[in-house]
Image (cartoon, rainbow, N blue to C red):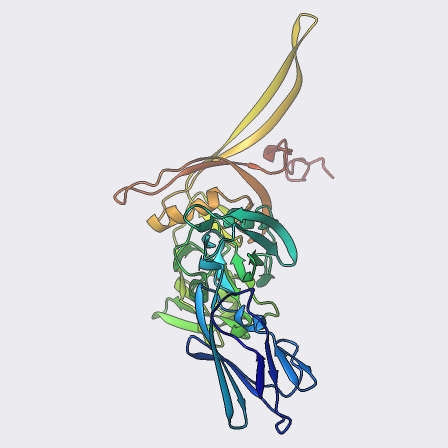
Length: 471
C-alpha cells in the first residue's frame, strides 16, 4: 500500500484534499477508518466502488473525505485516518476548521410548538461575510435570503415562528366529529438550510399552538391532550365534550379508555370508548367525542344515571397519557348557552355559559335629504345577544381566553347538534383575584347577516289548536 496524496496540517472544511491510495497487488482489501475526536466515525473495506466516499481507478482508490467530514457541525475538529492492508498500517492525523458554527437552532427531526421554534444563532470562524438562509415548507421554498454577520462575528435569525404561523389556517370550518376525526394540517414539516459554504440542514415539525407554552413539545404531547384546560373540566349530560391528541406512528394502534363513577355505592365501569389505527403520517391529530351521553351509552347506563365524574386517557405502544377528569355538574341552571370553538391548538373544545342573556336589536340608518325631506336610503338590521358566562372556576377563566379569541365559534342546542355559526363582537373580561367570583360578559351575533327572522310569536299560528276553521 502506498499513499501518493497525503494529509497534514489544518484545513478549511471545503479545502480538504482527496486521499489517493495505491494498493499492493498481493492484497484485495484495504480497510479505511476515519476517527473523529477519538471516536471511530467510519470503518469500511475498500473492496468495491462506493459512490459516497471512494472511486476505484485500476489499483488506486481516491477517497473523497469531504463527504464524511462535512457531517459534523462545529468549529475545529481533529481527525485521524487509519489505513490497513495486511499487516501494514498507515495513520494520517489532520485538523479541519469549519467557517460557520451553529450555536443555537432547531433540533434535527424535532417537534416544536408554533410559538416555540428557537431562534438561530451562528458564529463565523473565518472571513465568511454572509450565509444563505433558506426556509422550506415541505418542498416549497418560502424564504431565501443572504444574511450578513455582525461585528461580533455572530448572526442571529430571530422570530422564525412569525413566518411559520402564516401557514396554519386560523379560519376553518367546525364539523361534528361524531366519534373520531383525524387531521394532519395541524402539524407541518419545515426545513431550514444554511449555506456558507458548507450546508447545515434542520428538518423539524411544528405543531399549531397560538399560546406560548413553556414545555418541550415532544414530551408534553406524549402525556397530555391538546387543551389549556389542564386535567379537569366541568360538564353535564347536555354538553358536548371533545379531547384531541397528537398521534405518532410509534404509538401503534391507540385506544381511548374511560372510567365512569356513578351512584349506587360509588360503582365504576371501565372500557374502551374508541380505537384508532396506527397513523401513516409522522404526526396527525385525532379529535375524540368524549361527551357524557356517549360514555353512558357505551357503558349501557341510562341517561338519568347520576354520575359524579369520569376519566379519559389514551394508551398505545409505550404510551399511557395522564388521565383527564370530567366533573359532572348536576345543577339545573335556568339559563344555558352552549358553544363549540377551536382552541389555540386548532382543535375543538366546548364551553357552556350559565348566566343570564338578553337580545339587543339594532338598526343602522343612512339618511339622505330628498326634496327637503330626510329619507332612509339604506339600513342595516342586526341582533346581538349579550351573555353572562356565569360562575367560573379560576382555571376556567384563564382557559376561556381561547374562547374569546377564537376565529371559529358555533352555538349548539341541547339536542347535541351543532347548528348556528356565530361571531363574537365584544368581550368584557377581567380576571379578578381568587377571593371574588370569576365571570365575564360577551356579545355575539349570528355569522349569517340575515338577522330578520320569522318571529317566535307567529310560529304555528295556522295549526288547528289556534284556529278552529283551519280544516
